[in-house]
Amino acid sequence: MKEIVGGVTAAKGFKASCTAAGIKYKDRKDMAMIYSEVPCKAAGTYTTNIVKAAPVKWDKEMVDHSKFIQAIVVNAGIANACTGQEGYSYCQETAKEAAECLSIPADAVLVASTGVIGMQLPMDRIRAGIKAMAPALSRAIESGTDAATAIMTTDTVKKEVAVQIELGGKIVTIGGMCKGSGMIHPDMCTMLSFITTDAAISKELLVEALREDIKDTYNMISVDGDTSTNDTVLLLANGLAENPEITEKNEDYHTFLKALHVVNETLAKKMAGDGEGCTALFEVKIIGAETKEQAKTLSKSVITSSLTKAAIFGHDANWGRILCAMGYSGAQFDPEKVDLYFESAAGKLKIIEDGVALPYSEEEATKILSEPEVTATADIKMGEATATAWGCDLTFDYVKINADYRS
Image 1 (cartoon, rainbow, N blue to C red):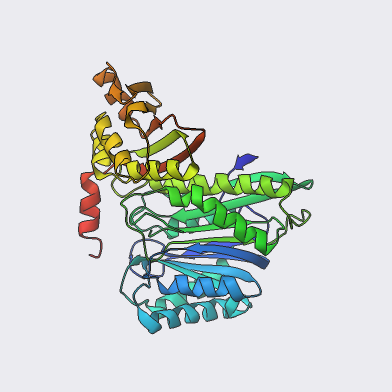
Image 2: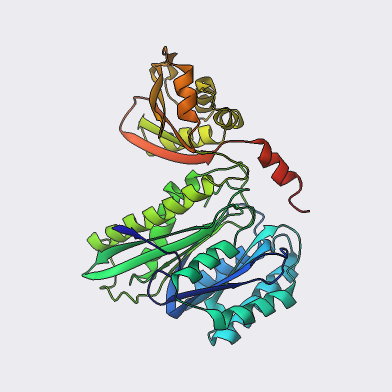
């Protein structure tokens, strides 16, 4: 496996484009389109929030029941959530417009929206944006990068990745892009992720691969503990790599799964590390757990602790907050057996042993915690299971960004 330059246009047969439709932003591109030259098998996972945006409902229906998928239309600025039947009809209109421009069936078009909840989409601008994007579709790597930039809201950087593997003697590519900075606490934010691959694989295994992998990637990140109405991950496979179709869980399937995991984990970490107002990616590893679920519960409890996140912002080795967050997680462990380490590019420091503080240097700890990527590792000495969760620090700017988001 190797990482290559690119995102959603890295795999064979995939094109992308974007445009400035003026949906909310007046000074930047705010719509993107992904298109496959041939029909795709599709898989999707969606928010578990009871309040689901219209695009989530549309995509689930299309992914589950359409014969194939060939395009995705995304807009930033307005979420099309809590918009009733009118909002759902706008999904239908968006798909119909794209279908006519691309000469494909309307049920082969998926839609996604991100932005302010409660506002209706300006369909005149949406239609104009689609008409502008369709003839501009390109396989160029830059087109994928531009699309990744166009779907940003409070994101500060575009997020994309691509990898290549060999399956059955053929080079297979998986690429993806995502957006997400706030309202991030998936359970499948305003989190959207789009993954494309030229692998030949059955729909059943494509769906299973995605659903299994999100458990250790997107579902292990949190910025602010808020699960969005719009969380969506879509995976399209067009088979143009011409590898022998993966129809069983053989060696090729597991190789594909590993590559998909790299793409999903990379995108998930990019979102956690770009949390609204944050200055650091905060990674929490639980090792020595009795079960995987125990490790997941503990690690997510720590990254969602506001007190711990504030301590990371202050570069303060306040390890008591980490143990406290583990203690109220609901997972059982013996706090008098826990070892805790802080680690970053500046070094690694053991903070506590068997639940008791060691005579460490506060100056060294602050140096380690001042890096843009910080890891806390807790060994609970109960078994061999591990889990990793990703979050970020909590800063003054998070409140500022969200206090006036609608204006």
